[in-house]
Length: 64
Image 1 (cartoon, rainbow, N blue to C red):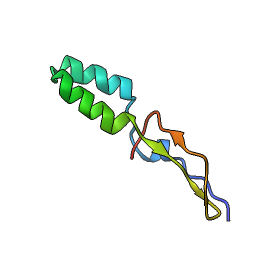
Image 2 (cartoon, rainbow, N blue to C red):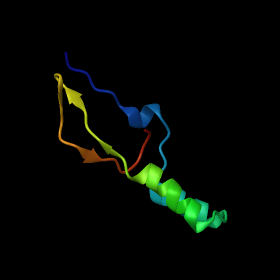
Image 3 (cartoon, rainbow, N blue to C red):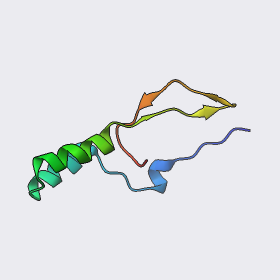
């Protein structure tokens, strides 16, 4: 079975650099910005293909 899902069209996505800039302009404390970036920007993923996980890769934008 082969299928393709275009998640970019299914979900809104925000560039993480843009999110950081907006938080700075909104006056978020630096420590809070650091915590949020750690939660959002340190995502390592892998995909299960035919029952076996692929090599890990780092997400650069999108949903978790």
